[in-house]
Amino acid sequence: MKTILAIHTGGTISMSQNEKGEVVPNDENPIAEEQVILKGQINLITDEMFNLPSPHVTPEVMLKIKQRIMKAIDEGVDGVVITHGTDTLEETAYFLDLTLPNTIPVVLTGAMRSSNEIGSDGLYNFRNAIMVAATDESYGKGVLVVMNDEIHTARYVTKTHTTNVATFRTPTFGPIGIVTQNKAKYFQELIQTEVCDINHVVEGVYLIKAYAGMDGSLFEAINNKNTKGLVLEGLGAGNVPPKTLPAIQSLIDNGIPIVLVSRCYNGVAQEIYDYQGGGIQLGKMGTILCQGLNGQKARIKLLVGLSDNMHGDELREFMGNAIS
Image (cartoon, rainbow, N blue to C red; front, side, top):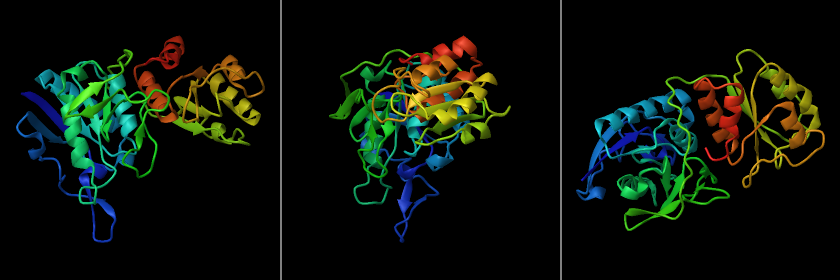
């Protein structure tokens, strides 16, 4: 019998609707001690670490979850499931993917409907996540996200709809597998990633989205000694309006790394356009091109790299590596 640690952190999966129809946190998690779904097949250990709506989750909280999982690995558990609010679930998942050894299965799940709503998906997703964590084929797959019968990699999955139960998707690449007959079935392999065993997280890593007519004001506002790094969601393949260029160059001149991704839902950032503000010019200025990640994922990766004391060429290689 497999032993699975369930770490509960809060979110809609642990909430209920009140008489006004408002979704609010509970004092007690309604699924935390749910064992009937496992039918004696799994030895489930429960740790109610947090009771946080996901917008309240910080990198410091993510680091505490990582440390709890490391302890569980040392204690010999066979897998870990984390219940989490969906708004920032993809960021916590990717943080763990970058900082945990790729050994036992680690699976995140959540819910789009609270525990007492009609069609609640929380208990179902929780059961599926446990079964995926207990499946032998889940070893070595990196951190996974299981929602709505699909298995996604933490690296590429993102929330795509505000309320739909099928909100979690992997643009461009698709899910890595599905849940069928209470077990994981995989169709793709995840390329190996580099692990950063960090013990702290830096502050001052920001995310800015480019838009039509943008000037340098936002870049000037963060151009100070407290800023450690910036991820820029560029237009299209990775371009910016020309009025932003002096402020971007000033940040680079002050030693602040700028990572460039695309704000597009599909595709990857590329140095294609050679005009003022085009990706080729941004590359020559010193921005770091990061392919395959959205803005929030790239920010997590930059934060982890900086927290691991990466700088210069090492940081550039880490951020520019499209497979990690």
